[in-house]
Image (cartoon, rainbow, N blue to C red; front, side, top):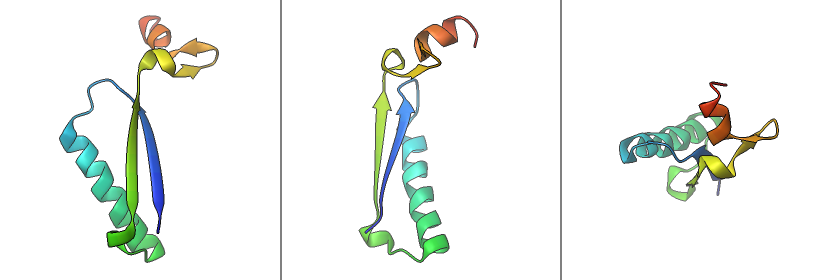
Length: 67
């Protein structure tokens, strides 16, 4: 039973985009590794940009600085 955890920043991803991610990852596991889609679990965690850091800065600050 594959378990896939996708973490993205919470900034405007639509329900349709998340559904496409879930479907696409499930299909990829089926075609690439012959995994059963019925037992494939995909979780999407959305993280506030204040809680996601890169290079010692939050994503919020990096975006404000144009990085």
